[in-house]
Image (cartoon, protein in one colour):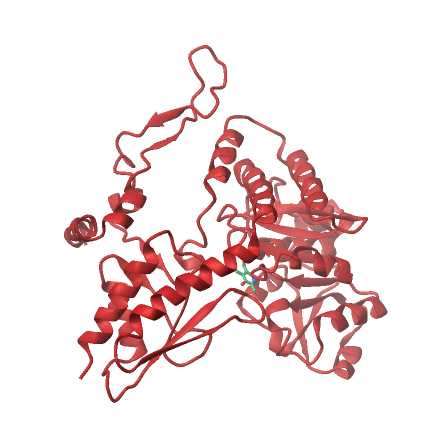
Length: 425
Ligand SMILES: *Cc1c(COP(=O)(O)O)cnc(C)c1O
């Protein structure tokens, strides 16, 4: 492992100047130390010695970094924060502050920036998954301290959450973690029959809108009709930016977003947006409060401040220009790889979740003897390593370009062309 990582690094430095330059250049970081006078130095930089001095701590640990053609995947580290965000997070690390008060202030700023409806606020959580769990916990316990300590024992509380069968997904583990039972329904009639005095909440998975019989606007109307709080998990559903306020305007009581995906906030941050009282009760079930279910989902002062900054940066971005840039990166890769006889590409944008330009890459199996799985493996083991898998259940390889760094599209085009050419008969 150690040996191979040395080789990785050597080849990495030798073969790809542009990329290596961009990764290895930054050796200065903002100093966390106060000066000898006790004054807080502003944006003072320090030279790193020891661990981190190469500019790439991952390589120093022997873990190979990848060129990310898959998008905002938590298993690959989510997204890369804006440099301005790093600077503000460093400032946040220079002071002590009452965290619960900071959460309320950050939430108010978020509500203001998003122009949320009256009576709505937000908190920063350690991710959308944490927002799901603490949002539901708050509904179950209210502000009752004894009940907050008691979770996930639901004695004396409501105990069921209604969800459409097609909306079940791995993140409903965070609902189940509170102790509730999920009641699956498919039709409006089944929903009506499922509602009872134990029903705590109706849950909606935004990405599954097309799959379920009851759509996003209808679900919230029915919840109001039955007087049941209603949550929408929209974790990965920006862009478009408008999704950040659409579901609050639609009437959802709680909405969750990831901070560490397309918003490019801190990796361990997300938002719970919703009605003030529900958001306040969610915070009571969350860190920094002890003896709570959410204490294990600590979000730091740096992440709370970073989330606010990330949102500001995200809202001010030219999203049309970004989408054009992402599309042109794909087209540059396409024009290279389609020079290989038998290779073709097509473009699509998923309606919801990862709503960014994607490219599907297919080839004539009679001319190129390579399966998409093999191609993916070869890309991953190439130097530099490229992460690219199958795309959105379509044949061939699929990729998007919104997590690529400058110059990486060239590397991807060159590697993929070479791999395909080598297998051409
Ligand atoms: C990513 C994701 C989550 C979890 O978000 P984190 O911010 O990583 O906690 C929850 N639900 C869906 C649908 C997601 O895509």
